[in-house]
Length: 577
Image (cartoon, rainbow, N blue to C red; front, side, top):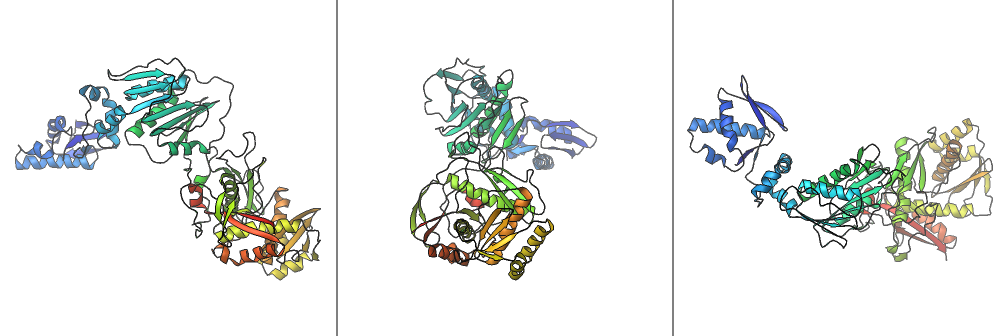
């Protein structure tokens, strides 16, 4: 053991012995001579001496006292074992000038000198313009950067160097293979280096990525929308320096190996200089689609939601009425910039018997919409037949609504059944057949479903007259049209109970929240079967084929983070034979 007392540790004599305090905690070492022993030992507790060497000249009883004292300090984290510290080649000047930075590292990790040497050895390049770039150069030099290359058209002062070895080169060309590339810009961009960091400054805000591998930094900004505009010049006074300090600290952590692996974005409000940390999910397409996948839960992972960098920008009840149905609305991000910049982001609505169910249904509809935006098309396998097929990307137009047949579910059977239902409903709604009029009370009672009976009772209590027509003859599967005040709601499902229940819920939704653009994106959960084995899918697909349609159901390829949470996103395409 090579004991080293932490740099912030202080001690004072007490009535019981010696009181020792540091950032890690405090303790009292008892004994009449405890203070004297610690005071004599402290100059040698630097990590340069082995404990065995320190106690070798002592008598047995004294050796026990010293070893007990050292062990007690180690247990209280006031002392560390420097035995496993890696070697370094910092000069005496570097160790003296940067003693605060080295001590800062010692608080959290081992091999502080070795880690700081990695920072000193890194070749850093800065690209960009403006006062933030100049402030970043100054902050980086203060933190210990030794070799810095600045690529800019601006006139940049060399900065206040802290030691004689620091070197700054300013030019207008591209960076020359740096170890770390930092860019100050007003828009996200691709950066090519071993490690990169991006500072986005625009309007009234600045965004700072955590320094890391290029693919991770790109993921941080992929779902970031446009920056908030402002006509004010807010990059004055201490503002550039505060932004630069965030970047310099991130660089320090990365180069010394103390950074977290998780992508992080920091938003700085340039008006009040408040900072907020956002943790965007990774954005990568590396995992193959698993046709046996099933979602682990029917609860929404809140990490999907972030107002600026989330897969979903919002998932909330907003001002939607919540009685008798729980209703939720989601806003979907567009990480591939498929939609024009002026277009609003897509929104979807979901509902359920309670808040959790409404949020889950809304998330399914939202993630299906998201998948339709990020899916790039290509070769796929039909989930119904197992045959290969080619699927083009969705032709997205603003305002965007995912095509009929885009759906999601806990299982592939659920997702494909929802997509097939949507196409069946679209065909039935275009039919000229008026259907067979039904008495709502009779058809609902005959279903034997308590939920359906309750829904009709709610409509009757609200004095909503509902006309029901059976249109099952159109496709040969249960289908109904509900007419209320001149408006129609069409539902179609593999069972009459599901068709009735869903239709009455949609009628109630219109009464509760006004007209909503509702396309089937989810269904009641089934048995978790693959689509080819799911009786609902077989029934609905057969009905479409009888009507002279070809049916193909393919997985939507979304990024890994989304498919890890909800793997079953599909696009069902129906065409004429």
